[in-house]
Structures are given as C-alpha cells and as structure tokens.
Amino acid sequence: MIAWLNEFLGFLPDPLRIIAVITAQIVPLVIVLILCVAFLTYFERKVIGYMQNRIGPNRVGPRGWFQPFADVIKLLVKEVVVPSKANRFLFLVAPLLSIVPALATWAVMPLFPGYAIANIDAALLYILALTALSIYGVILAGWASNSKYAFLGAMRSTAQMLAYEIAMGFALVGVLMAGGSLNLGVITEAQSGGILSWFWLPLFPLFIVYFISGVAETNRAPFDVAEGESEIVAGFHVEYSGVAFAIFFLAEYANMILIAGLTAVMFFGGWHSFFAGSWFAFLDGTPLAFLREPSLAWLCVKIAFFLFCFLWSRATFPRYRYDQIMRLGWKVFIPVTLVWIMVEGVMLVAGVGPWRT
Amino acid sequence: MSRISSAIKTFSLWDLLIGLRVTLRNFFVKKVTVQYPEEKTPQSPRFRGLHALRRYHNGEERCIACKLCQTVCPAAAITIESDVADNGTRRTTRYDIDLFKCIYCGFCEEACPTDAVVLTRIYEYHMEEPGQNIMNKDKLLALGDKYEGMIASDRTTDAPYR
Image (cartoon, rainbow over all chains, first blue to last red; front, side):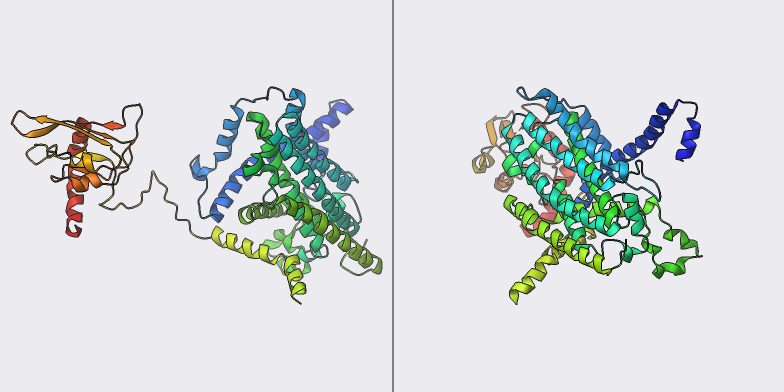
C-alpha cells in the first residue's frame, strides 16, 4: 500500500512526497480513532446501563446509534467560557496537550503484520515519553483555570498518574526483557503462536499491574478521584466548557483505547490470532483456516475486549479513597513488579520459560 | 494460616472477581424498562390523576356547593363560592382547584356526597403559562363531560370493594 502511494505521488518532489505519504496514513487512522471514541461513549453508556438493569440511550436514531453525534453537536455549539483571571494561552493549550499524546502514540502501534505508521526501534520509550506528557495537559488545565477546585483536582490526578507511571514503566521493562526489543512490532512477533505463547501467561502479574495502572493512568473509575463529584466537582476540567471540554473528553476516551491497544499488543499478542497455536492445527485446510491468520481484526477484537473490561470495572467497583490509591501504587504495584522482574531475570539467565531471546 | 489465606485472596483479586461476576450476570439479565411514550404500565381503576366535575344524565351539575371537599382538602387547594341558581337550587359560582397545591390524595372525592368531584386516570398533562395550574369550573366540567365514560366505568369496577 505504501509502495503504491509512493508511486502514485511520484510526481511530487521528495520531501513533499514523504510528507504526503505519511499524512495519507495518519489521517485515516485519526478519523477511525475519533469515530471509535465517539462510539465508545455510546458503548460505555449502554454497557453500564445493561449492568445496572437499564437499557441506556435508545432515542437518537435506531437503537440510539446517533447518540454520540447528538452529544458532539451539543458540545460544539456551546460557548467556550474562559475564566476572567485564567491564563488564556495555557487554558486553551492544555486540552491539546492531553489529546495530542493520546493520538500520537498510535504512530508506533503495530496494526497488522509488518505495519506501523512509524516502525521505530525505541517504540517502548516513545510510548513512555508520550504517556508521561499527557500529565502536562492535566496539570496545566488545573493551573491555568485559576480555580481552587481545578487546581486540587489537577494535583490529585498528577500525583496519581506519576505514581502509576512508575509501576507501568516497570511492567514495560518486563515486556522488554521477554520480547528482547523495544520495537513493538518485534515484541508482537516474539509472541507468535496461540494464546498460550502470548506474554500474559509468563508475565501474568505484570499484565495485571499494567492494566490496573492503565485504568489509574487514564483517571477512570475506580481510580477517578480526580473527579470526586462530592469533593471537587469534576476535577481539573471544572472550568472547561464547549469544545475545550469536548477535547478533554475525547482525550480521556482516546487514552482508554490506547491503553487497551497497548495491553493487547504487549501482553495479548497484538495481531496474532487466538487460533494460531498448534492446538488448532486441525483448522488448516478447512474453510475456517482464515481464523488462524494474523490480522488487524484480531487486534480490534482484543482492544474491544479490554475496553469492555474498562467499562465493566467502572460499573462494578466503588471509587478508591485517595490514600488507598497511593498505597496501591507505591506499596503494592511497584514491589510486585520489581519482584517479578527479578524472577523473570533469573528465568531468562537460567533459560527457563517459554521465551528465548 | 489466616494471614496466608488472606494474602492469597488479596493477590488473586478474589473479592474483585466476585464483584465482576455480579455485574456480568446482570449484564445478561432481561431488561424490564418500560419505553414510556410507546409502552405504558397498567393502571388501577383507583388511579388518582387529574380532577373532573361530573353531571347527572340530564346534564345537571352534581355539585351542590356543600364545600365538604374544600374543608377536607389537606392542601387547601380547592376554593368554592356559591349562590342560589335561577331554579332555586344551591350551585357553585366558582370552583377552583390549584394543581400546584393539590397532592392528589383523593380526599375530595371521598368526601363528596354526590360523587361530583372525581380524580380521573389522566396523568399526562402540562401547563405552558402561569395561571394554567388553576382548574376552574368550566375546565373541570369539560373534562368531566369528555371522560364521563372512563369515570363511570372506573367507579363501577371499584364499587364492590367500597
């Protein structure tokens, strides 16, 4: 596809052609992502509704399918109110700072075999750097709003995100050791085979820690103290309205999709098929053989599953108290990951285990 | 021993899994939500909704301005003024019910010796302007004329139990 694009745009001078080819890859991905975000909000309301024995939105369009568009239009036509003594520039830049990392990280996501928009070798570092960057959006939003509630909310979420960032980083160290590379494509390749050769099995504690840290990192329930309604209204984005709020909203959901995607790629074999293992060799030669092929569809299935887990836990668990969150982050997750990295190191040196580098 | 088992329980996230199982089970439970404008729940003939004033078959008003309803009304929602009508009978000149005050207890209906004031099963009504909350005599009589069939059949259904 890229070769075809290069040929098609061959009449352009080199730098322009390269930019055009990259843009042609980015634009569809971003559009698809934003549509996914829109429908994730609908999906969330439906899933949580069903878990609470309700039906959820079903008025706008058939079965409520157009609900996200109604929400978006409502937010777009609202006024963006900038508080009178707010720092206008930072106030408007903060939402962008939280959405850009959430979307930019997708550049290194291996979408299907042998393809990522940017197939860079330091992908894992890039991910760590960009997810850390999204904290700036939160803290700048809280600071620039010139509101005590927003500032307190920003402080809380920053402390929380920093704490879980560390556990997340250690979990990624485990993935790096098992995969033998920082390149996400290579990490996915290293998990080739069926469901039992994916990293979730040997790295099970790290997988749990990573996913829970991911929930905490995106400030989702049950770790959404940043928006404790009874104490600090909506947290760092109390003062935002209209489009600016919509962007924060978009960023939160884009981050959810991103965390689900990264979990799928690093622990659940990315685009590998469930049926790739030798257990399912009997499928070869039957019409169902295509199920064994790695493809984008498998990645989507896995992402959808983890998104469901996000919503599922939101519908199930009550919000953590703030000191409990900090205790979990610092006193439980970090030791657990450290211990498991040790165990993994010993296993690697001794040559035990399903992974070899 | 108990510390070990509690540690195992903690690290296997056992309690969380139990909670997740509950929500997942409810996810698949059949939903019983009534889609209101299209579907409606069944109503009892005793349902207490909007008020109405009834007439006899010959078109004469049942209300004799005894003011029992006004007296019994716990919310003081009813205002009655009376006078002698042309045919020499005692009739109301004003019969107002303030829907904002009314608590739909049905005492007025119980108190009425002639079954004149009744609560119908109508509950889908609204006010668009200030003052529309006052149901005057004309409006109440019009409602009574319009829904006489429903009112009468409800009273008949309920009569054996009174």
